[in-house]
Image 1: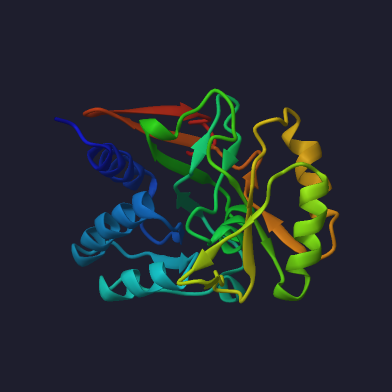
Image 2: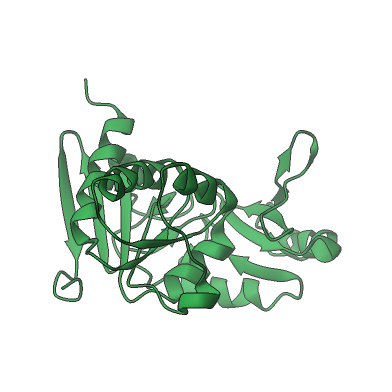
Length: 230
């Protein structure tokens, strides 16, 4: 029986074909990205020379344990390639990300990457975004007033918690998860959410996919601009 985890591993392994000697590689967060980092660690141990820029402290720790050399965005300013997973991706390759709480660093790295690869299992492909709640990162000072605004927008906001306290991101912010199933225009929604003072970033990733690699049973399917990937 082919499991979801097998699909994740297949997509992750396929993405390594696009990593070349000497590249600066952005390392996404989440379970599929962790598979990619583990496979990349094996390649590094076999002699591949790359530098990684992690999108979360958890991924930084994993990469370090595998001997992957790490650097920072401040030092390199641009990534050759960024590989990450997604919580949902629709037919237009719009995405919801941030289930693991790393959406801010993930979006910063993706924005500053020449090439962006998204790796997912087949369950992440959807007709319409919104089955997975949209994470919004907010500063703690403003989270209650932001929650009130989101209630007025009928987004049914829920403050994410961990161990009975507000969840805190690596940047020291909170996450509010909202229901966007009723919305069709993601670009307008994203702009509206970002216009609320206290909102740092949203988990709507629009236009952030050059290549989508999907694990489907024992195979992978690749969608997107192969030419741009070189």
